[in-house]
Amino acid sequence: MTEASGESGRKKSRRTLLAHAGRHPFAQEGFVNTPVYRGSTVLFPTAEDFERHRQPYTYATKGTPTTRGLEEAWSELSGATTTVLAPSGLAAIALALMTATKAGDHLLVTDSAYGPTRIFCDGVLKRFGVETQYYDPRLGAGVGALMRENTSAILAESPGSLTMEVQDVPAIAAAAAARGACVILDNTWATPLFFPPFERGVDINVEAGTKYLSGHADLLLGLVSANAKWATRLRNSFDAFAMVPGGDDAFLALRGLRTMELRLREQQRAGLEIAQWLEGRSEVLRLLHPALPAHPDHALWKRDFSGAAGVFSVVLNPAPKPCVDAFLNALTLFGIGYSWGGYESLVIPFDCARSRTATCFAPEGPCLRFSIGLEDVEDLKADLAAAFERMGAAAASL
Ligand SMILES: *Cc1c(COP(=O)(O)O)cnc(C)c1O
Image (cartoon, rainbow, N blue to C red; front, top):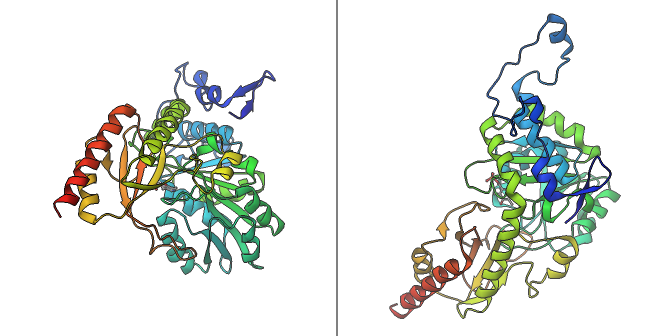
């Protein structure tokens, strides 16, 4: 695991950092955790203080000790110059894009981007005069050839949503840097623990804290971090929008942060074990999991990542829809629902053939995305095995 510098000179591991970052107990009467600050107004002792704004907090849209604690911890963890929060992962993506583009610009977005990211680009950004062009996530340095005079930003997401293509972020960053464009990465899957964005050349890193940071499916949150070059512009657009999360969500995210490494490691282990088990099932055609050697981007994942999250997809052998539905409906431990990264296992069917425009995703069978939670792996396998049996029975009765 990548090391972070400690004050003693000895390098502290990220795991230690997660336990200590963003906490200031003696600013809170010694209490270990910063409490939830619910507030709007912050009082100034005198007229002169008001005029000079010479105190750390001035109004709650600009931050409270709870939100600043989280920003500080996330910056330390990801190696960022600054971090701002947003009320959801999607709001964080919108903020990053509004920071890096302006009317008249050309924007390159990976074809494998999270669906709502596309909706934001094709709707709001288009209305504001930014033209989005989608690119093949496997293009790597080839994105350079798509860049125009007015290309101001490249958005990457690695691995891509649902289809799990790993992107060559360092090569994309080198191509962007040569032309002065901003590289934005949606790093939600790996988190800074498994992919250190700024060491790989990213300018603005986005994380849906809703997923692994929360870890408990109990909040919505986004984090946007920037390197020194983009920090001021990011902070300025954050201040202009004042899209701030509530203190309770920041508090819960800080609580999630303390165990994030443990959960991710366990979900990596369980996810791989279940993926390998699925690989051996006759109902399964192939796995879309970058940590499996058969994945086409496995070498790239191995080069750039230090771990894998517990989220992956599966292409089933061709089966009629009622059989896939029978499989999903028979699951008792896996819930059918959006989002992921919580302690509870989830599954969704997906068909993204029509939403891709730069590439052709034509799977040979029905697709499912799994998020492995913290349940016992043998129990999860038994649940899947029983559901496959129901699927077989449904096929026999058609
Ligand atoms: C879920 C998700 C988001 C959005 O997060 P929300 O908090 O649900 O808005 C963004 N990017 C990726 C890759 C995601 O999986």
